[in-house]
Length: 117
Image 1: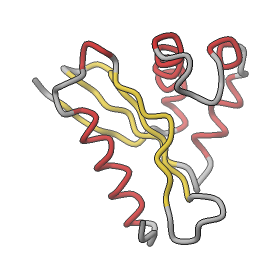
Image 2: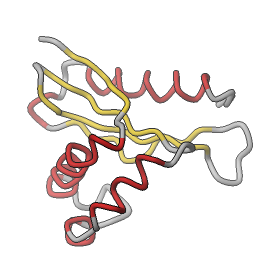
Image 3: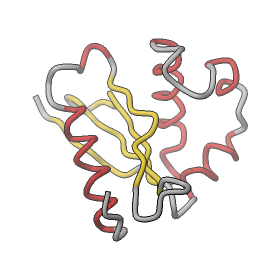
Image 4: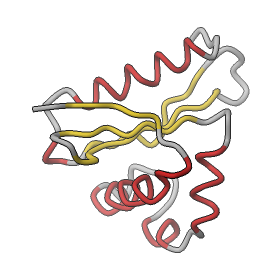
């Protein structure tokens, strides 16, 4: 089974939105926003987040389809630290290593940004 990770660009905002809504539907207590809030977010808002150079969103693909995501950004108030946020893998893709690859993408991005932790 093929697993791949890609950094989401602004052109992928609809894919990011679809995964985020799936995550919120499946794990409503695990995130800072609700499904109802994110369902009505304007397309502009989704694109702006992906344009923010301080934030990186990674999409995980399993067997050629989107199956997970994670967001990373510098941790506010903790110089030199990156945060890992909004990580989710769809239930059908769990146990195959996609989550580990998403974490590796966050760690690699943090290192590329000169963040130590």
